Each structure stands twice: as C-alpha cells, then as structure tokens.
Length: 293
Image 1 (cartoon, rainbow, N blue to C red):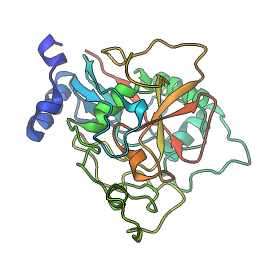
Image 2: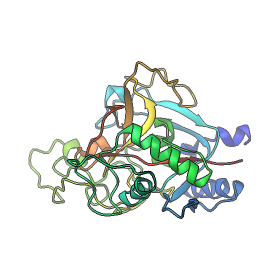
Image 3: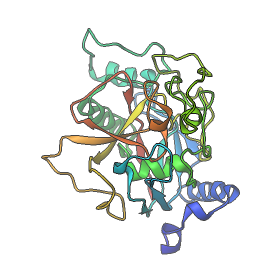
Image 4: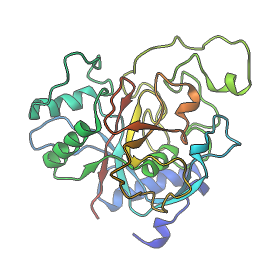
C-alpha cells in the first residue's frame, strides 16, 4: 500500500472514481468486490464487500440537522488498508449455523428474529465475540467488529451529507420509526402524516437500496455494535480511528440507528453508547474481515 493510496481523500472523488477505487482494491487482493468465504464445515457465512483504503471525515457539526455534541468535532481518519465489511448485518440464518455448530442457545424468554434473513438481535457482545472466533476458525480468515471509524467511512462511501443517499431520506429509503421523519421535523412542521406505517420490528436485510459501495441497511433497521469504546466526543480520536481499550470503560459505540429510532438517529454521523453487556431487539452487528496482502 502506497502512502498516496492510503491517504486518498475519498470525499473529494466522483462516484465513478469511488467505484473504480473499490474495484482496484478488490483486484489487488485477488477477490471480487462482493464475495463470501467458505466455511470448512459448509456452514453459511456472511456475504462481504471490499472497502478501499483512504481518508475521510467522520462526525458532524451544528450545521447538520440532528447534530449532537458527541458527534463533534468532525475528524479526518486515515484507513491505510482495505478491508471487507458485511454486505448486510449478520442474519438469523448465519447465526443459527454458529449456534448449531457450537451448541450456543438463547434464553427461552427472548424475542427472536422471525425469518432466516432478519438481522440477528438480542445478542450480547460476549456472544458476538464467540461467533467471530468461530467464523475465523471455520474460514481461516480474521473476522472482528469494525471500529466506529471503519463503520462510518464505509457507510458514507465518499459522502459528506447526513446520509449516504444525500441530505434527506424517507421511510421508503430507510427503516426508521416513521412517526419521526427527517425532512418534516427539520422543517418544524406541526402537522404531518407518516408516509409509512410504523413497524415495531426489523425487516429482512436488503429490503432497501445499498450505498455506493454496495452495503445494505447502514442506515436504520438495527443498530450495530462497533469495537470502539465510548468517548463523549471525537476530540481525542486517533488519526487511524483506533482507541486503546480502557478496561474501566463499560460502554461501546453503536451506529446506524434502527426501526425504533427517529430518522435523525440513522444519520452517518449519529452514534450512541450501549453497555458491553447489553442486548436489545433493535441491536445487532455486521462483521469486518481483514484482507490479506
């Protein structure tokens, strides 16, 4: 990886160039842009998208509707190596393969995803780590959770707007709580009718269009765990986006928003803290797979 490639500002590039950058990153590691690792046991594994190395801005400022102080200041991060990110959040079907292989069982009283393609939820980070270790062993590749910087860089796919799709999204673009839309609230309308019927559950993955780099549901559906410990702002964020783990910090960053949240909580910059022992019906994850040279 050259210094030029590692520090390319993707937010100064046109869409065609961003797609070309992704294609070239995949060719360099001898993979298709979209691929899936085979498990030794034949178990189903997550589909992945190659994300190119580069530099980009994360966070937001007060000019963005929905901005929260913990999203500031805007910071540039440099991701020196390409990586592969789950094309979708991990599904119940993919989780069931792990559970069957390892004997993992949920608590009897838990609400559980309805269909094989629904994102897995009600999973604690400790169980997620077990899944990642199993998947790494099955494929011979290193899987982990993305950092907040990796997640937001991939979500933005070269954009600086509140959403990867532009300045505004609606409930036909993103699965959020349609009682609290983005544009109507931004305009401070006193009266409006929801454009979609509110649904109190996640939808199957891939129900909406992907971002430019082929990632689905980065906005909405379920919040997604990252590996980044919670900090109250981005002021001390290292340039590579990686904080050292503080054993006394029991909070981690989750990204993406969910079916339960207002549209502002699904913005690229939006972030929330959740406990490292927490699980919820609106909280899931997607995998990051490190790429070989």
